Amino acid sequence: MTPVLSLVEVTKSFRQNGRVLPVLNGITLDVGEEFVAILGPSGCGKTTLLRIIAGLEKPDGGKVVFHGGGARVGFIFQFPTLLPWLTVLDNVALPLRANGMSWSEARERARKYLSLVGLQAFEDFYPRELSGGMKQRVNIARALAVEPTVLLMDEPFSNLDPLTAESLRSEILDLWTLGVTTVRAIIMVTHSVDEAIFMADRLVILTPRPAKIAGIVEVNIPRPRDRRSPEFQKLEDKVYELISA
Image (tube, rainbow, N blue to C red; front, side, top):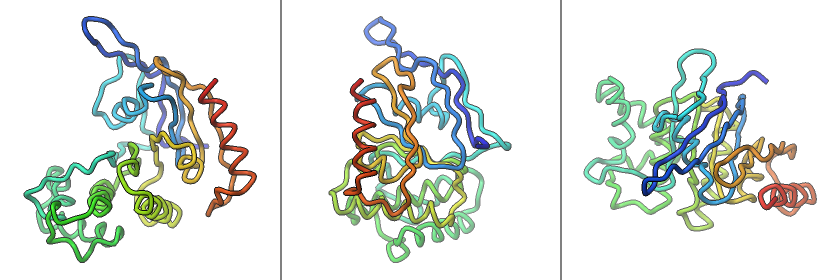
């Protein structure tokens, strides 16, 4: 596997009430052209790890290496962080403007990615006029519009109703498997073992804080995956064993 990015002995601590709280303890991982899900106990540092990959946090030690030159990172947050005074179109275009694009170029690209997530008819709407699922689609379009090499997703479906969440899972997988975006690797944090097995190629299981890698599980089940299949259930049992060990 040729890596798209590598984590090399990444460590991180925070200060809390005058005490040092170790969070990540030497995380080393190569990520190729694949979909990786990160699982682990609540509070073990999964989101912190994503933020370090995105450059939003600095590690205390170790490094993140993007191979093949400079890499763009797109980030889909758990809650849509849309600006209420901007239209859907301009919420997607704004990061492109921040990177130096003209408004006309940024809006043209924004329309392309709104179309990919099925919101081409809603570009003039404001966030207050959208459902929760539609807001998250805007969030997805905005992350894809920067044309990232690596897409990071922090529990992107956990705040949605079950039907909307399932629909968005399938749409993300379609965009990924059809290769219609610039994304070469996806890293998703989730608390759901079912979701991780349904979507990812590899699962990375973290220990409780300070987190190390407890195990890596390959998901060798053809897509579309049947949650009721013996292979799916067997893998689910294996992952729960690793998480609870």
